[in-house]
Image: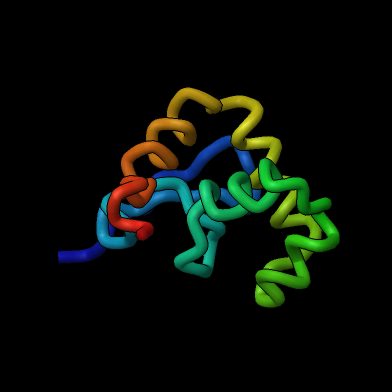
Length: 90
């Protein structure tokens, strides 16, 4: 069966059930939007994010942040579900 990809209004953001269970990713990669958002929340500038994730272009990073601006509740939910519990960090 062929994977179904869901287009978004953002050029570089897509989702498919076969990659991360349908979580929004950067098209052509397995990089979730949440990974970019988390780096940004830690204080990384978009140009620095490209250094951490060198397979991404600056346009892809900005598009991911734009997607987050339009879908904060969705992405925050993915961030929360993927958070490592405090007691497992020790």
